[in-house]
Length: 271
Image (tube, rainbow, N blue to C red; front, side):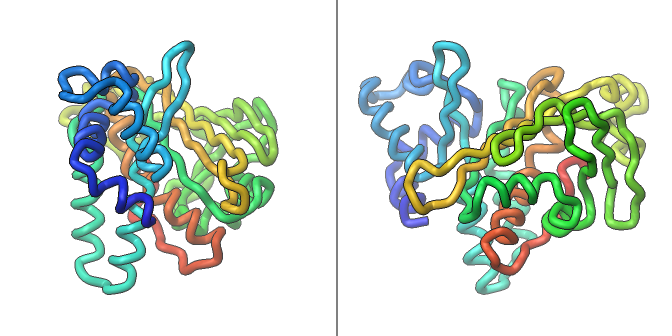
């Protein structure tokens, strides 16, 4: 948390975060365009932001793309808002709106969180319904988690598991889990301006992938990277719908695994 505060204290680094907030997934060259900073200075600022876990770098071919990682800011909000209990919901809503800003140009979300646990325990939390229903507040997936198996989804604590044509794509215990995402359901009609727009969007199928690896610093647990991609484009309603939910869910998952009081997500990703 101290690293995040120190990183945010510099106006140049805040400007880089603003640029990623406006357009995620930029290269070093793109981030430096139009700034009165050398390429080396931009690189050094990005290194500080990466150490503070406010920026995540992902390699795509020869390029290194940078993504805003709002999870540490969410953790700061959880700590202080949880302590003083003043305007919790209003503050979190404002934080979400501020971090998301306008629609991203690159149709992909990458989030990273560090959790004091083991890879085996984290994988169990991603695949065991007893874990899932706790940090997802009664929502979530159920499967035998074998490649090709169906993933059934429960839309709320009072709902039933439904086969929404989701499938397990990859399953490496302690390392990686990936599955296709469900399409929009009738309950999501309110997100659209017309029936025609809703029906057109129901064919979109994205996927979510969880990568588990040891944290860079010994003794700091594991690093979980969640990548949700495969959207139809930057104006995808599904991309917009899942983006806010994942931050809250990851924060709740971390709290649960580290033995703290669980902060229930305000909604599942596409509520």
